[in-house]
Length: 501
Image (cartoon, rainbow, N blue to C red; front, side, top):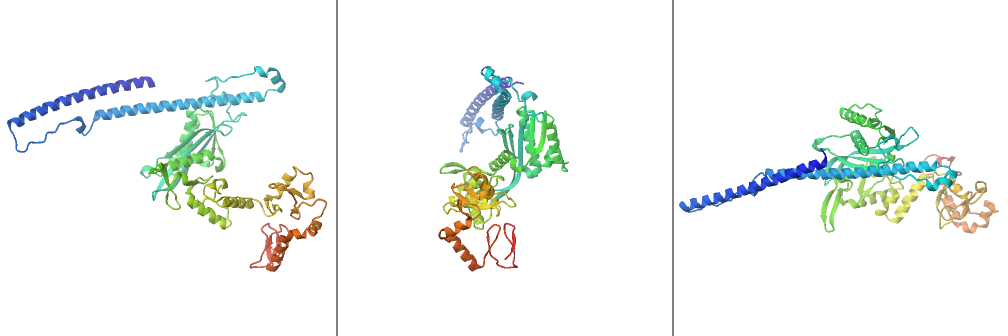
């Protein structure tokens, strides 16, 4: 039955119900009047010391109003129809946008294959306008087929199951996130949805993953996509491993049935870090389940419980860790990061057994700018091996670089830098000597420059004096100072070089 016919039937039904309700109200009113007249006449014939209270029965006193219930049902059906029509309009709009993008991509590929001579002669008259319905993502001719020199749409998905704290109560929550992208990884469709765990329902992470895939395939079919590349990080989801649990086997069979509806639909294993969009959408769905609205002096705001301090915090003041998407309040994250920095440790997510490194760029909301700079320096020092580290010798710069990258940078300005030892700082732009770690001394050896500029290297002299006083030793390979606190004289430097103390 089409939507217009169903709407006309519902409107007629509504009119009939309202007419019946009006007639019923008139009959009740007439009956109540008659009852009042009869009671008044009876009291006039037999007066009483304590006259009874007259009570008029009206439709508002009824315990159950079936007509109002029917009207609510009709209104609910009307609302569902309006919602469905709005969804269909948005879907048609999305399909039209997809077809237009497919048309533009095919047209661009055709232009790339045209020779310059042909284009100079006929290019002004070459056109291929887009017409609605002329290009369709539903057909295999849309140019989105893998294995035939073409690409397909990419389906990312992620299911999450975890224990969260909401107002000092631990609750189990589950969610799915789906991202459908075009061949160039541009997001075209998203799904973020919480999964029902009421009634003590138990759901494993694997079940949530497959449920996310089902949601993604359904969304792809609703967009009339016929060629989809599934990007996942679980062997079970790909169907390469036989599931043992019956519930998981049922979901896997459902996935297999959905895959048959596509012209091309094959899974590909990728690192979890590549499932970027879907991971975030699934985490957003988790947050929507554990946050609650609160009236404040500034209006309504959403609150969320920090699982470290167990305080109810505004959602805007919760820090989201990139990569794992765990969330903690700014205050707890500030303390966590500062403690790690003081101990010289690379900062990772505070969640148990989570090893995701904290993104430096996102810490500006709660960290002092100086700490952010220290954090950036720590990460860079950790990423460069001891034998590759080199610092700019100019005191006002002292930038940290690797020998390989500074040589590559210098080759852009100097020829034969690898033989001369000349290097150009990547930060301040001044040249220096990679051998003696001093400003560049053209036509002069390192020893001659050191003797002629001994007064300028008082800091090095003080360091050598202190090292001699403290009995420190210097590694001949990386020049790092070493102190023997206990043990034998066999030293293994952090660069890997071994020597006798």
